[in-house]
Image 1 (spheres, rainbow, N blue to C red):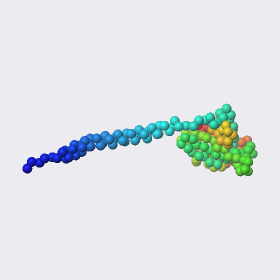
Image 2 (cartoon, rainbow, N blue to C red):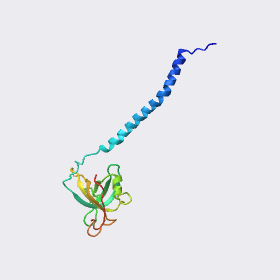
Image 3 (cartoon, helix red, strand yellow):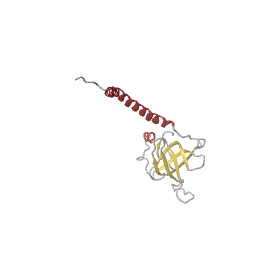
Image 4 (cartoon, rainbow, N blue to C red):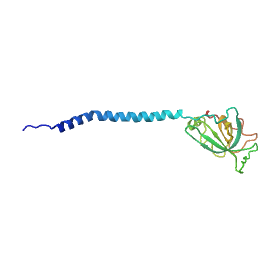
Length: 172
């Protein structure tokens, strides 16, 4: 008996042999395309950075306060503090509550290299910061000098580099 192969079986066998070669290549192509897409997103992220036009960099203000919290961030960290007067009393805002200020620092990784972490900068710590204020008058700014930590009470003569620990967070 002579066996014959039908055209459908030959085509099926050819396609199967072709798939053996092309499927790994096709899979590799998808993998490379996906990897390229992901890397493009990762590489583009650092370039997406906001302007500092909102800060008046011709003016610096130095102020002291009691830290409310440190907010670590991947691109910028922030400190929030209650403003204090020269006697160490919190300055009340228009609503009678302590007047809060927020200051933008460098990234969490950069400030950690300078020793500024949630463990070293705990709520209640007296801080002095020099900042560039926002142009719109909001109680916010960008760091413009060293951050001074002075413990839990305001030292006699104020929280200064001579009475506290100077931390030098990198610029934004």
